[in-house]
Image 1 (spheres, rainbow, N blue to C red):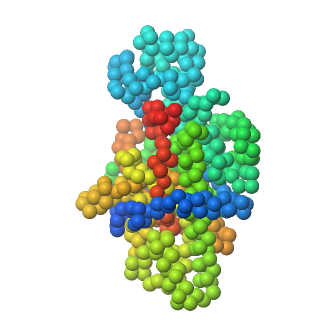
Image 2: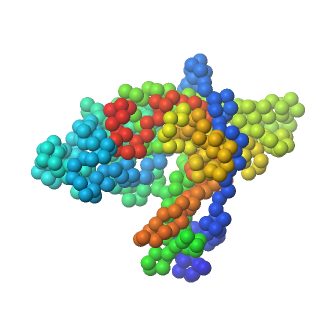
Image 3: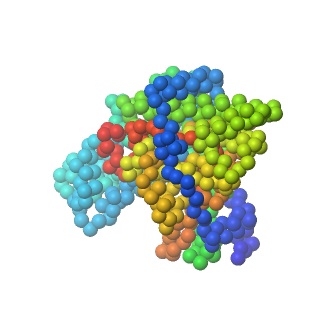
Length: 499
């Protein structure tokens, strides 16, 4: 099935023949659904700290930072913003000229509220000889939309989301990239330095770097810190081969194999190369203006405090396990693993070996918000490969929709995860874990796509905060909905939280 030419193409990407054969086999077999115990809820897998506890956790985090630990803010920022503007692309191509849908009307009725209004007005004057108001007055709405989307205008239809102007300030509008730099200073700086890492697509890397270089000094001066900004790209070796509907390799017109990005799960390789004790992970578009940041900052400190408090206890127990613990100590450690780390042994023998395995692994605390219908992974108590039950973040694709009990759990779930994670990635001896060792490879995902009018199957790797972190210790903390403000469409920028 694979020719010498194929093998050469595969090797050039840093992928092995065995990996491709495995992927093609996965197209045939699919991925198993996960076995669920329950949807997590407050009191059953989700912690809801009271005010006194929150203060203790904030102090624990401040003490941890004061010890000079290396903290990194990791921001996946490679996605293009094209999906944000799906409705406006449709308007430009529509067979009518004036705003007709509710979405289009809302956009144009509120156009002056967008942080990019002045920039868009300037490119309209440059390209059309008229500003936005004049173009709209004469009914030329499509020129306004086209100048927002197209390369000769703002090029927002192709730029990465992190480079769009999101929020207005007296000193000028800010992009999400800038808002993340501010957040890095406010809760992730240690010893006067903030380490921020962006994952960026190859096509936008130079532009992203130039924009960061242009902005970083002003924030360093404003917050009295130094920034260490780093970048990485998704590795070609994490791409996956595409398949035809009959599960044979999909080929381009020239006969070469088609590879596709493996999804955000590929970023476990990037995360694995970060030198850090603690890593915050947050999506590029989940940012708010300064007036709303205090709540975000407090809760980031809370979940980080939960993390370092639990890690400190886990490390102490691991040292006890190194020194022939008594039966009483074993019982105490077992209770911590089950109650505090929400890992139920089920039919596993609870001995020193089992406890070491469950304690000596990466740890993450995930903020979860009450479910209000936004898209996002849900927190569940889920069976693992070894028969234990622990907390996992699941997407709908991982749940058997034909299982009425599971669907009830999913649809009636009280919370979801908005990608709000803080991770501890070193062991109790100070050595970094090799994160790919903790991926559940059976949690990938197959979707239907097309290329050149031909149907194909695409394979996504286990998601970064789903199967890629399946064998981590996971803790869920309820955080306020105000800490979650994603921008999925351009009109989301009109929400009060982004004004």
